[in-house]
Picture 1 (cartoon, helix red, strand yellow):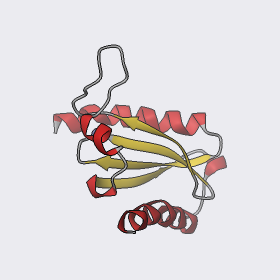
Picture 2: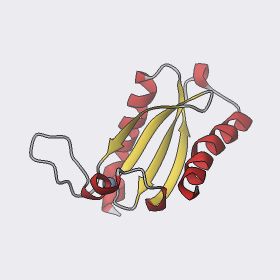
Picture 3: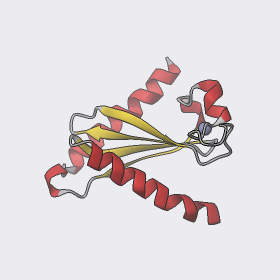
Picture 4: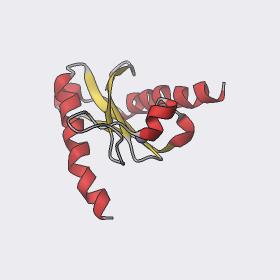
Length: 121
Ligand SMILES: [Zn+2]
């Protein structure tokens, strides 16, 4: 439980960073993998995904002074939908970026629905 509390501010910071760096991002998609890595990316009003950001919260194999690298993600590219333990969408609180519930559902289906279909195909 201590880990959960420690990683929260990191996620919060990444969330704010993505929204402030991407003017077209109305929300952030978050995927948690079974290796404890988090993949986060900005989502546009059209349901498109912007440059993804990876947070490596598990053990790293990277040498010192290098960005952390997850050994599990390194092996399978970190985009294996079978390893996803949790996914979520968080929306911007900026009134200029606010979208309605219907559009939120549509974007959610587009992002997570297509990821699952691509895996099965
Ligand atoms: Zn990983």
